[in-house]
Length: 472
Image 1 (cartoon, rainbow, N blue to C red):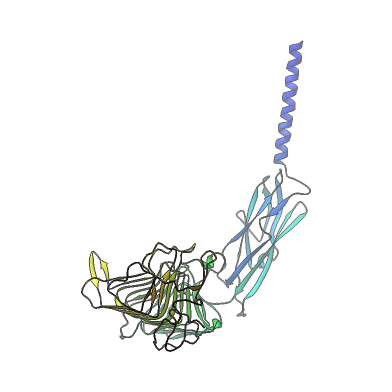
Image 2: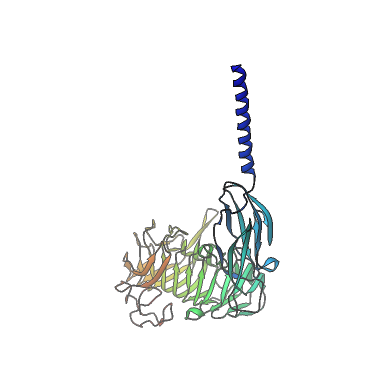
């Protein structure tokens, strides 16, 4: 009898356990009703300046189900519907409306958002806004969206085969590349902004005349077309300006070239015997590989800043170069480690185990070559091979070197004396290469006939400061 009783009790307990397990399973597999705890990873998404018709980077937020049961989200939708500038995709399902989404307990789903602004007649930036509407269990939440847009001139795989002038009425966005044909001049007016895509080298077989003005709003700017954080500060955002064999009579003044792979590349001398590039009052910054790479070419430069590039200034296989009031300075940042000299200069290249040397004439006057806290001991490296003509001089310069540059004439050069730049903050990427009070570069130059500095401000005739900026 006792055995029968125990057997019955076991059967009852098993049945109760099965009921509890089933109930628990049903609870987990059932949907929560009534009030539910739902949060989003962000209450708003902001898109920086965009160019009409090119779209944007994709941003996203997550919708979290913080309940111990599944949640059915009845709808995720754009307030502006199909007419919205924004587009959404919810866990792989495209909008503008996505319905009946299931989110497991303590799980989440992704909402991806892009924006595309159609061209308008307006030339100034404008803002577009919308919201993502989330509905569940008779409850609602919103995530706000906004984006600044701007109309622009768009050129894709553009060939410029006749003289052309770009005005500053709207930015220029270059996609796929651009070529200025031989015997053709592209003129860029003051204040023009050129934004270049990652696949778009700018080739110049003819002539580029980019002459901006001293005021900030008159400077010409070349940079990548990604202006959203964090991409807007990345180096190698676009290939760079490439002046090929046939190119002549190029002029760049009051121009800023940022975030390129190789900002300026020059191949071979100009066929007319003149300097291939006149480069004045300009800034080259944050180029991943080279600020300037010149191969057997020719440059006349005044009042230029080349900063924080992988290799600031590389002049190889000879050529003719004159740099006056140059500041070449680099500091390791989170983008680029400073591990190459700010100036590398040779009269040769090696091709197929053969050394090819070419005549070299290079002078650097009233200039600064500097870095700090880096593995580079010699910021100026000059190399000579072969029997070609070789004439390299440094006059009234500051340079950081452990060993003086070889095969060079040094006159009035200050070795390893910090120029004392105004602000160097590598963590915040805040660099101001103007001179502090007490800098050894102040009044250390010689007369060179240059009456202004990089800012267009006056220089004294007799004793100018070294570098691109004059202490005012």
